Amino acid sequence: MDIKQLKFLTALDEARHFGRAASLCHITQPTLSMRLRSLEQELGLSLVNRGQRFEGFTPEGERILAWARTLLAAHDGLQAEASACRGQLVGTLRLGVVPLCGFDPMRLISIFTAKYPHLRFQLFALSSEQILERLSSNQLELGLSYLTTLDRTHFTSLELAETRMGLLYDDRYFTFETTELGWEALVRLPLGLLSSGMHFRQSIDHGFRSRGLAVSPLLETDAVHILLQSVLAGLFCAVIPLNSGLESHHQHLRLVTIEDAQTLAPLGLILRRTAPRSALGEACFAEVQALLGMSQIP
Image 1 (tube, rainbow, N blue to C red):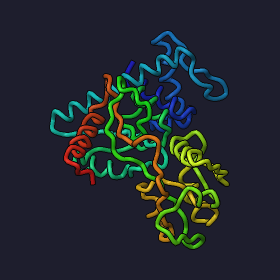
Image 2: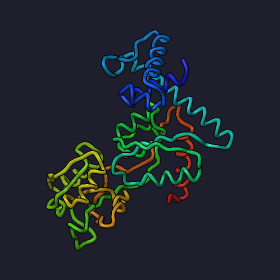
Image 3: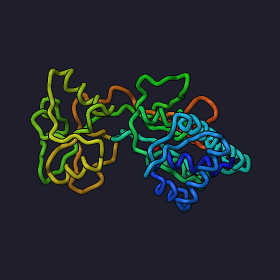
Image 4: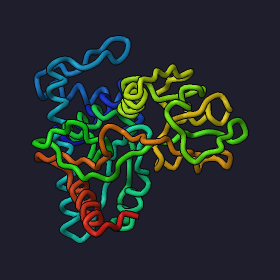
């Protein structure tokens, strides 16, 4: 068994397709299949359900996959620790971010690159639940998510911001004569919102319900770029965080504050508490922690 076989196994889990997994690993599909079969023979277990195409992992495969992620995280941590001992920090930091995040993740990337110029980054748009799940399985180093009912025995966090809300609109199609809108005004507007069940949407629904109002959005989506496209087409207005930076994407986009509107929980940077955890994640988390202590997050 070698580390590459474990990488091939986790790549298959990520891609859910033999060809795409091989492409991720920069090898041919026959090579991927051969190396996975070799791993199965060595372990004496069938790990993958095979048919005309990838059909998922066997129960034994799911258990081995969890160990593979842990071993790969430990391997990456070892490499990062060795680099840190040499006065460097290198590797790829995987950051999970909730959609319509009220704290621009590029601010974090700027902080990390200024301190560790050799880092690379992978950003994933995920739900709060997915972020915690991937942190637990060492598929992420850090998460940028809401701190609702966070299990403090397994995760540590830094509160970054209270997420306030505003209405995003295109000034070619809508005009507002005020700098702040009440919730009653929103009910009369064509709205595009994140899908029901997402944390930011739950906070919006709570804002309406707590005032005895009901909202019927004309568009619901889990994709932020679709919200942007619909606003720029003049079809809808969208409720978004005030500090998301989305209004800067086009000269005609405007953002007006919604009165007394914020998410149900603050936003924070989350790190897995239990070992093994990434040296990259620990170092970047500590950097943000130090800046928060000095109130210097740009």
